[in-house]
Length: 578
Image 1: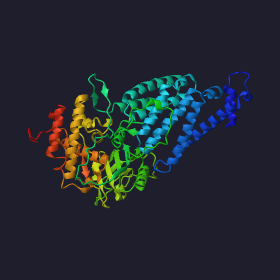
Image 2: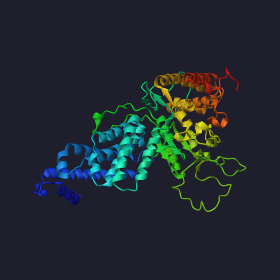
Image 3: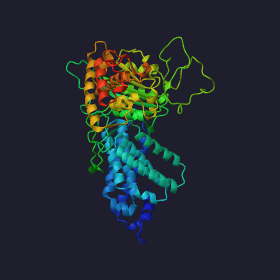
Image 4: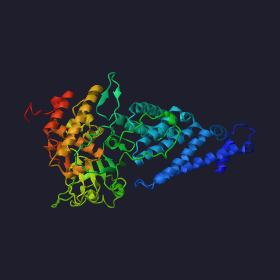
């Protein structure tokens, strides 16, 4: 507003004689224009919170407008920095705030579109803030709310670095953040000290979550990416008859009670979202691009399926997002639902066993107020309310549906019925693990780890803490051959359910199916995994002899175990009787 603008002008002009009239008209206009852009940008940015979280169309034009204003604002402050310094008193932290908002915009654009290239853009703005020390002066000001802006910037920067697998940088940022938090809590006696210390603990646990590290010859840690890379998916061979379906939408749901998490991502969600993304092409972000904001250049075609990330959703939230995805699913497309959640088991027994009689997985209660729920012990015949039952997914089987359930009650979803004859597959985790594996469950589920990085999971279940880089690369090369063979087993089997083949044309789903078969075969041969509840299952069932118990695949697994020098952990038919 003009009043505050005038106040700012008087306030920041240090020469005693200068009055508003002494300021040249052009410079005064520069300050007015800047204030207008700044106000407009804040207004639009705050409006982003009110946009619906689901649906693809409503938000795009609003995001576009917001980007445009921020682009103008950023360029404007670059072109008129001197005038804004002397006449408006523009501080470096204010430039940092604009850059930080642009970083947030790109990050949210990535969340909305699943386009990893936008993560790189967010990274380039966040790293510029640090390189140019935009927030450096904040600590000299006696304003705790400014320091909080700086701390929040660090937390957001860390999330982007985690998603780009920049683990070395994450460790540096965590160290800097912890020093900032210490300084903040000493200078201002604030109540949020515990919250910020919790942020530090969460991110430290997140960084340490991978059970196995890959080491260079000098013992430094090698960071690998587990996104889909060129050449990592076995190609379809001539004559393979598979469906033309494309994975278009995915719901990634995390509701495990005691799992490592940071921001609103559990470690399982974090791994699964990467398994559904291609490697960004330009991971070496060109720092020369800083300050050039061109959000309008959208990638020509969407490389990745669109994702919704739902952390501890209530039933109504989950159902709303499911319905929105279902409604907007294009023709010949697949909806994937990934559930990593605590199991909910049925309390009573009914004579008729239907899709609501086996329990399911937990949905959150704290935001759903249900009248009178706690007043009386519920009738035994009533079903668990805060639970996603297999029956809850039935309406969505009218379109191709691919379900992954990682839970202690995953087998509830074996009791599925394909009512509408559309392609439908459920991949279900083991429900019981040997104690040594169970003890690690806080660092993420073994089943999801297999779907994300089979070699990481295989090494982990064999008790390895580290693997040398050369050996890791040889094992990965060998696994590529194994994946090719598994692909042929699936497509050549005479007894396999057609649903598997209908999903096999999509690269992401093909890789998930192949990794699922590898996981099932490996755990069946592992001596610690003794009972059938410790093996993954699927609906429809896979023909075991052709896939998870194939003698060729068993030989491959023993060869891999020998390569890693852990063959004594596996049953070898040729050497010992079961």
